[in-house]
Structure formats: structure tokens, C-alpha cells
Length: 200
Image 1 (cartoon, rainbow, N blue to C red):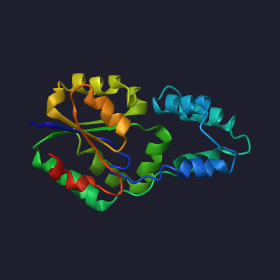
Image 2 (cartoon, rainbow, N blue to C red):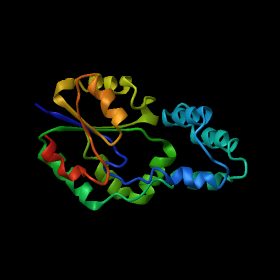
Image 3 (cartoon, rainbow, N blue to C red):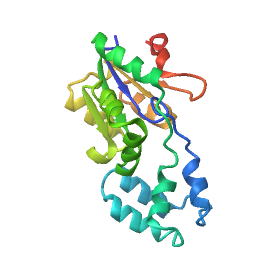
Image 4 (cartoon, helix red, strand yellow):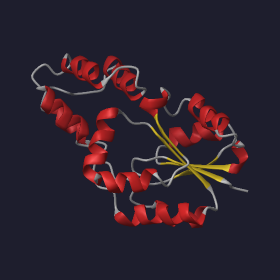
């Protein structure tokens, strides 16, 4: 029986254009993801370096870009948050049928843009729907590492078999499955979180 629901954020609630950043960085010479650049981005996503350090190190890869241009490129993937999804999660929270958690791989610059795009009030409304709001850069863990799921389970005294984890990235849901967590690998543009009831 599902008692707890753990939600991803990007492309579950807020829309993303996951190719926008690489396209924007192509103007400054980006051609492919290198191991060093990938490591830098994941380190930042875990909050192991701050935004200033991240931008400084990123600038070493794209020397013709200004800091402002790098921030713009980095945040270009962040799109809108449809109102029907916000209403849906508020209604679900008000029902108090499930304990609700958010678990997102994200970073400080992206969250700043999310809040700017949504507006402070809408962002607070969203955040208040969850018992805990876990962002990777704040807890220094990231999906799909199993440690992040174990962290959520342990810190909230949750049983894996009573949890449903929803994420649009199959690698993330597969990792959660190994711990006995029920999962929904949501297919973007074909499925929507507002139809959650059909999955439980």
C-alpha cells in the first residue's frame, strides 16, 4: 500500500528544455560533454562548490563567454510551471492521504531562475505542499546514487515498499527500484503528473 509519494521536480512539475543549455553553450564552442565538464556540473549539483566557483571553472571551458552569458545559457533550460500542476499538488496535499516529498537534482542558479519564473508566491505555494523539500545541492547527494534514496527513507522513517517515486529519468527510477521503492518513470509529453491517480 502506497503511503508516501516522492516527486522529482523538473519535467514532472516545471517544464524543461534539456537541450537548451548545450545549444546556448555551442555559441561559445561547446561540442560535446567531456568527463571534466560533466564532473564539474555534478559537483555543482551536489553543492560541493558555490555558484561563483562553478561559473569561474565553467568559464575556463568557454573563455569567450561573459559571466552573464554563462548564467543565461545555464538557466535557459528552465521553462514554465503550468498552473494545473500547481493546483493538482495543492489539492493532493490538502487531502492528507499521502506524505509528500520532493527530491530534485538541482543547483543554486537553477532554483534562483525557477523562483524568478514562477514568482515567489507560487514557489512558496508549491514548496508548502511537501513535508520535506530535498534539493541535491542542499543535501550534497544526487540521483541516481542510491545514497540519496536511503537518506530520504532513513530521515523520514519510511518503508521502501510503502513509497512511490516519480521521475522522468529512467536511470533514477531504476536505482530507486533496487531498494524496493515503487516507481513511475513518467514519459514527458505523453504523460502528466496530474493523472497520478491512474498510477496508484
